Image 1: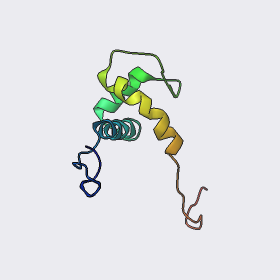
Image 2: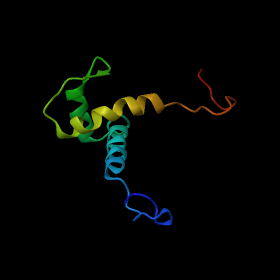
Image 3: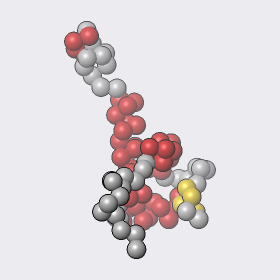
Image 4: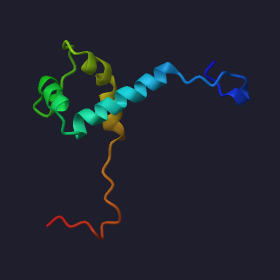
Length: 88
């Protein structure tokens, strides 16, 4: 069913992959956006600059905590060629 129509499928996208992508987006927003919901949730799941791994009563954190490692493993800073970056 999830195969493209050219391959004989119905072209329906995998709900599991759509859910993973949505959770990864929420995880990204949680750590990089400055909104009220991010401050509230981070105050519950972040201890000494590390995130907790145990369960808390939060439907959002329960969904996105598995995507945290994916985000960290694929997150990087791209500085360019270094000619226009001044640290001092």
